[in-house]
Length: 270
Image (tube, rainbow, N blue to C red):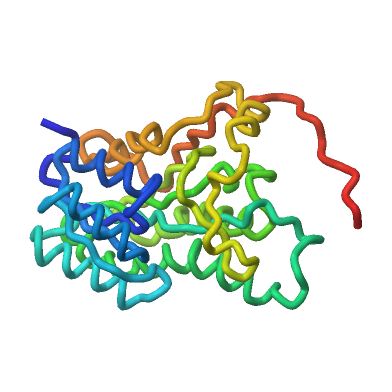
């Protein structure tokens, strides 16, 4: 019997990458899962591959009504909701402040924070009543950029620091009925896209030499796959294995935080 037998979860951005890895691992642990996914093509493949244990909803995390729909359809299919995983996000490809086009700043900020922060807030709001009824939990995907600079540009880093604050505040507000925790993965090759405001909406992180970068900045010196992070979500979703955890973040950054002295970036053209 798996750690999540009888658990019903919703995962946003579950059509590919880390989100899909979490969905697949939850299923392997005995859960049933609803998925909110913006790509109809990814959603169709997910449902075809994984069958009746998954219910897919085509929608956008920045829409409150789409978050309400995925919660409602998941509960209608499986009868309850125990875990809400807010995972959908975009990356800014480490675009520095000095390189941001002035005429795109407003649009870029709104796009980054609407998806990476407001999308999490809307999802939590949509799920809160169902989770309170089951004594469930919320898990938010953070990033190493929620703790250290250099994992993105100022907008991505700020958005992930905001997620850390959101975890702490919601853990405080929603206790004792709902636990709220986070997982902060390091690098991985996925279909994580960039902001449309920078013309990067169809460009994914796999275009970056990520393996070389990870070797330079982590002590483990290896590039994990998305599935390597999924067990952390299982642990936090499991009532029998993490019932005392709320406001906690599992920082699985490959040892970036214990690396020691590093060369300080400098010489920027200001």
